[in-house]
Each structure stands twice: as C-alpha cells, then as structure tokens.
Image (cartoon, rainbow, N blue to C red; front, side, top):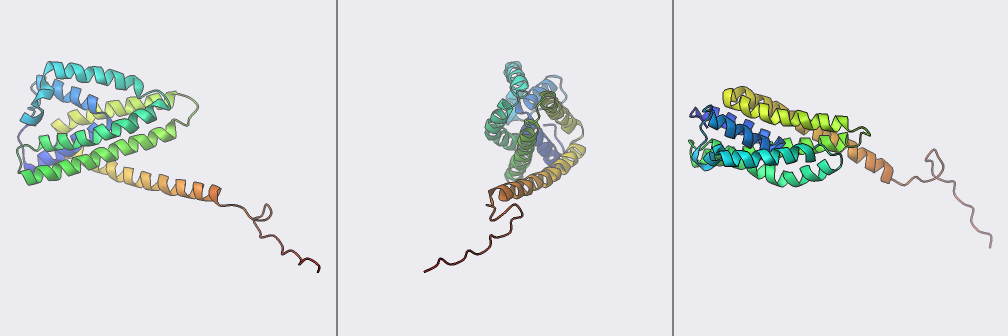
Length: 215
C-alpha cells in the first residue's frame, strides 16, 4: 500500500484483512479500482490486483457471491466453504500490505490478519445461522447486502484512515468474541436441557420406591 509508518501499515493490514473476511471479492475489486485511480499503490506481491483483467475476474466472482450469499440455507454452505479461502487470503493481504516492514513484523501482521479474517467470517456465519431460521427472506438478503457494503466501505476507509478503520475492526472483533461466547453458552444450555432425561412425573421428582415382592 502507500508508504507510511509501521503503525499505519499494521493498522491498514488489520482493517483490510477483516474486510476480506466479510467478502474477499469485494475487497479485491475495491483495491483494484483504487489502484487504477491512483489512490493506493499496491505492493509488489499483490500489485496484480490492480490489473484490469484481475478486476474483471474479481467482479464476476463478486456478482456470483452477491446472489449466492442471499439464498437462505445455501448461504450457510457457501460461507462455510468460503471460510477456508477468506482466512488465508486475509493473512496474505496483511502480509503484503506490510511489505515495507521487516519479515518479523510481516509475519505478525499475517497472523493478526488471519485472526481478524477468521473473526469476521465466523461472526458472519453465526449471524447467518440465526437469520436463516427466519421464515421471511428479506432479513437474510438485507444482512448480506449490509455485509457487502461494509467490506467495500471498510476497504476504502482503511486506505484513507487506517487508524480509525483498525480501531473499528478491533471493536468489532471484541463484540464478535462476546457474541460467539454468548451463542455457545446458550447452545450448551439448550442442548444440555433437552438431552437430560426426565425421571419421574412432570415435576421431575423421583418415583416412589416400589414395595419388595412377596416371597
């Protein structure tokens, strides 16, 4: 990306990686167009993203994902599969974004990028699991559209204001951890309650002891 301080590049890497966890193709299209407009200078490892043919391929993938991501139930399978692509891609983007830093800091950025990409993808999948249960399709499509806009907007915002974007991402990651923990506790309580066999009558009291059989 554009030259800057170590902190600025790390902040940029974290924000871009989180956006990739939401929608990788949207991030690639946004970065490519920003590079073509001269707003951002992509480093050597990912400079190819700024080529028009790559932008075109990413745009086709964005259109496919735009529709696939808005079909209830199918979107769960789609996002589960994309999890294995978005997380490594987030790490690679973070590594490339810190190309001007030392190899050690690049590795740190890659690990952090993969972590925030995993948080974004995990939160997206968890929300979809909840929304898909809704009988009407509008909430699912609305949430998907919001995620697409967030990925594009966060990518642009990270280029212009990396520190603010990284702060937003860290807040979202903290909220994601809390949400996942809450969902896990709720699921444990629910399945624990349904799996526990009931003994005795409706009140759950143990049955009275039976009298011994007569000799």
